[in-house]
Length: 290
Image (cartoon, rainbow, N blue to C red):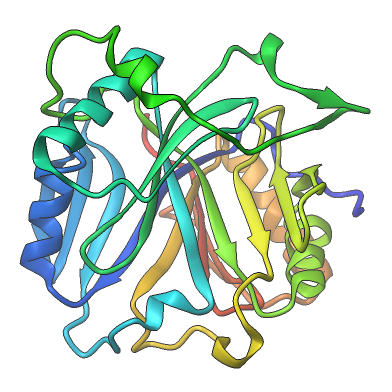
């Protein structure tokens, strides 16, 4: 593990996806997920918490995108963390009313989650985090599990309806399918300063920069014959944005990347660093306006 660490106040902020059917995807994220359309310009929709103008998802119109190309290297799933268990139950009820297919449901020990796919096959996880004192730990690491979630028990106790995503929702983590697990692990840990939080699952690493259970997950589950370096015409994840708490922390990351001779983009005025991971996925580290 490298000696450099990102500022522990660094947070995962948003994910941008390249999509073929722009209008259909905007409608899905509005009416099924419950995001607000904050802004739309230059073939990109900014979606998130309208009252706070907080971006969670960007949709980039890519009509030339190759169908099903988002099933290879890139996004395995992204997670919306809802504030409470009741919020998750209301979202479940919402899906059932819409007759929208639920692809999975799990109790991970530290969180409870349901999974769906958007219309272009991007896998989305909706979860709530259990109190930290209940998280399963083993030798300082998260000892995550995957157990079936009893959604009927959740639904029988919930009242009310779901229309928009709760104000305190955040993007909790992004799970990536990578070309070479060891190479990607080295980049995120030794290069960017993430630390391992859980590696008990086969060919998977869960990484974070603070005490959260994970902000980035890396897996090598995609069959090798289907893997490829992320290309312009690939749909799915385009870039992932992290909110860096202070400009000084951004400069420390800049010095780290320079010391390792990793190519990156830096804009001092906009307080942003852009760097590609070994899979061609763009990562943006920004000091966002509060």
